[in-house]
Image 1 (tube, rainbow, N blue to C red):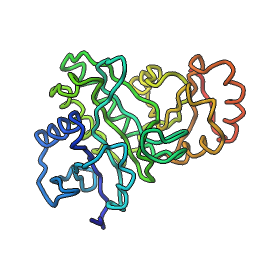
Image 2 (cartoon, rainbow, N blue to C red):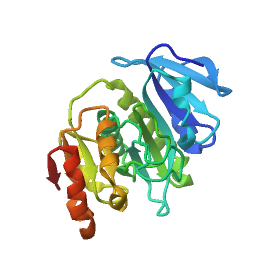
Image 3 (cartoon, one colour):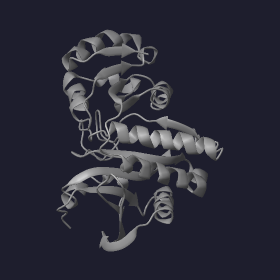
Image 4 (cartoon, rainbow, N blue to C red):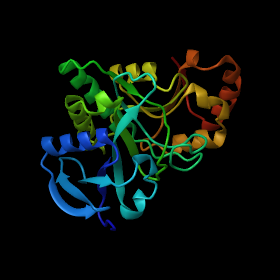
Length: 280
């Protein structure tokens, strides 16, 4: 199935119970109409102010393996993946991140290839998650995650996730929050309201970068965590800058969240980006 017009996709997976629950919440909250099928699953379509045509599709396979998505939707304006989140801690979490691999492709995608990060759309989703979590008094963390896992798309792509274990995946009020966050992300996909930055350092879930985005007029695109810095080279760094939907204006370092032995090599690598550097 080839698309001739620009399309925004909401992407779910029938193999992911959280994804199915989020998608059902999207349909119950908004005026979508069923159109043609995709991968033998129903497709739904709607129009929102200030956005392109929006389609909700359901994949047969796992979302991280949706590497061929652009072959069916060649004019892809934005892909928002509705996904479960899983962690060993099981901490209830609502999260957002862009997909792609900073090193090997252990979980879908292409090695050392990242997707295009829609910084403002991710920030909009993060803010919506936080506001609704507070409004409904949900006992969930809200967080940016670093760039990780597949697919690695040459199109703007982001994950909105519900986790981190089966009780949360089946939590319909929380799934409704993620659904509203996904819709918030697509409403103003053309907006360029915030200073766009690349984040480096800190843990997989970066509380500092999350707090900055929630309190300041700043939107993070790609986030490179502490554990990936040792393998970061100029090529990967420049790719993360160039594969951000908005123009990256600065690099933000979680300075205490960077190992001491990585700091000097990192600063040398950052010279290739020719961008202002700020430490937080």
